[in-house]
Image 1 (cartoon, rainbow, N blue to C red):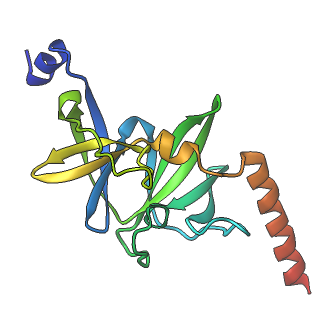
Image 2 (image 1 turned 45 degrees about the horizontal axis):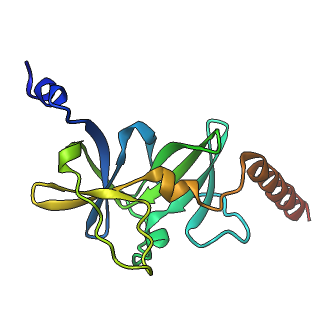
Length: 181
């Protein structure tokens, strides 16, 4: 019996997380939510969108909103560099799937976390919203903040796919009209 089989038979549930870096901190998201990892590319900026929504990209015919987690978390903004990536995640929201890209500084690793290694998030009081933090774990003496992408992104005020399509169509029409003048 392998070590992993032994743990599973003892009731421990292993979950895999993709870890990434923002600033000096390391975060993780469940790997089952990750659709793909892409290098940074420029987005189509949406008018009147919150600052942390960088815009949208066309991913094989799917319009994907791109969210900068640095800005979403209130971390100092940096210019995007060669290690900047977009983690494309797929989450269920109101009986539909949404595909959303999150901009992070760099991807680190895939880790396996047992339920007994998951530590509860400390309560910081009423002022701090920590509902999207699933818990904390320690890997090689470094703390990793595990995020619940459903809580983090499911409540975003993101336009629906049809709203995004109409916005992009309008932007293309406006762009064509400007070019012909």
